Image 1 (cartoon, helix red, strand yellow):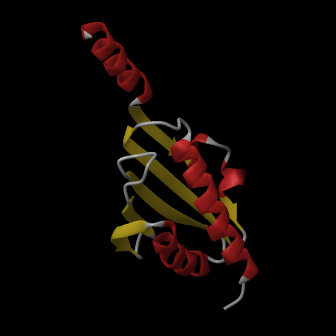
Image 2 (cartoon, helix red, strand yellow; image 1 turned 90 degrees about the vertical axis):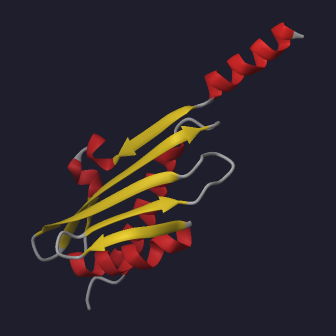
Length: 131
């Protein structure tokens, strides 16, 4: 019986871990949104809650948002930070980082989440380039 407990504990240790992904880990060209920063900012604030992310802080002066994605079956919650950087009048670069303090299963969860949310914000922003 003790061996069974140790095997179960070992399995939990193997599947538990921390996850992290940031868009700065990929080429900047993949992080460009072809829309003015104010449009991207509005879409970011509008879309994050639809992705179950509770916004903690927003700072429009630095175009930074922090928040937490609610606990789900895959993680104990994700800490997220987004920063928008203007590139001229018509382009914005998004620096998006997600950290999963405790991840039960699903390595790559943070990367999938960041890429998915980034794409949704990009699509919404580029569809509405003019104000």
